[in-house]
Structures are given as structure tokens and as C-alpha cells.
View 1 (tube, rainbow, N blue to C red):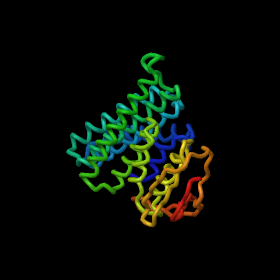
View 2: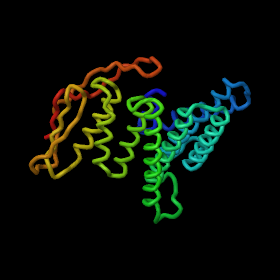
View 3: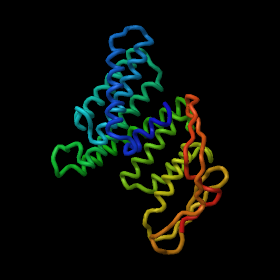
View 4: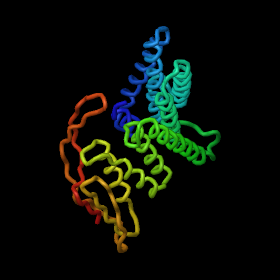
Length: 274
């Protein structure tokens, strides 16, 4: 899966409702088409279409629905699609990696529903349980992503793209749960080389986390190997600014060999928060 998939689900605000409605519609059209084909290649495509249908409708739920679909209905469709995807892949005897991929999608869906509930797009069982049920969904998502990370690391490697995507999600969910220390640790694990797009994303998130108001001065360093460390200091004002940031035009290549140039803040060898 390309990195663009992560952007779609982790930063849904960058996508317009109209775009997500079209994405959900096309994924559903593809799934409906492949459902009538019986050869093995088409069945594999059917499973892939169902997977993307689950992710796209999950994202549509997260942003409050769109078109003829409410957030709640989008969640129901996503849940059904991922369930069918799991059944189709099991029937075909798909690899463990493909089965774990569906589990990852279910984690994304739990996260999306939690975001939708926190924003008031999806109703809890009762108004007074909104906060409790949102947290339960995030805890469920966190458990799934940890499980997927272990499985992908065993199937491929800890630095494989599939495993790194799980790290990204674990860090994001930890942020939502206000477990900032855990989020920082997972951001460090996400670093994959100074100019890797995912490293840049991890460093941006890390910068955001350590820039939050705190009682103590924080000093952050990034060595030549991309390893990040922080140090406590004297009590100071919560107002901080980041030094050592540079804006460069990066050329990235995704797993499919597609190249794209994008402006991206790059941390120089030593960066300090003051």
C-alpha cells in the first residue's frame, strides 16, 4: 500500500467530503463489479476492492459522512466490507500478511469511529457515555495496531512498510489517549532515515508533541543517524519556538515506484526547542 493511504486516514482534514464520497463510491463500484467474477484473479481483486471500500467508508464516517451516506451508515458499510474481505481472503487461502492487513483495516475503522464520535458525527449508546465509548474505541484500535505490528514484524521485518504503518497508528492513538510519553517513543521508532518521507512525518509529529505547553525546558537533538533524544531542563515559559528547521523540496518514491516532490520541514543535525 502506498504512503498516500496513511495520509488519507491519519489526516482526513486534508481531503474534502466530495473527494471522499467519490472514493467511497468508486470502491463500492469496483467491489460490486468483481463480486460477479469467479476466477481466482478476480477474487483477489474483489478482496482488495472490499478492503479499500472499508478504508474509504471508514474515512467517510470519520469526517461526518457525505453524499447519501450518514457517518453511521458509512461505518456500517465499512464494517460489512471488511468482514466480507476477511471471509473472501480466508476462503482463497490468502497469506497471513493479507489476513493481517484486514485486521489493520479494522483497527483503522475503530479509530475512525472514535474520531467521529468525539466530533459528534456518530452517537454513543447514551449521551453520558460518549467520552467512555470514545476511549474504548481508541483502546480497541490500539490493541489491534499492536497486534498487527507484532504480526507484520514477524512476517516481514520491524522496518517493513506494513510494520511502520502500524507504528504510525500506534503513535497517533497514543496521542489521542493523551499518553504523550508512549507517543514519543513510537515516534522515535518511526524514524527510517533522514530523508525518508515517513521520517519527516515522524519528526513533524515529534516536534508538535514536545512543543506542547510544559513546565520544563525541552532540548531535542537529532543525530546523523536520525535518532531523536530529548533532555529536561530548567522551568521556563511554555512559549517555545523550533530552531534547526529547514524547508526543502523532497523527492520521495513510494513502494510502487511512483515519485513525487513535496515541500517538507527537515530537522537539521541538531535542533533545539527553546
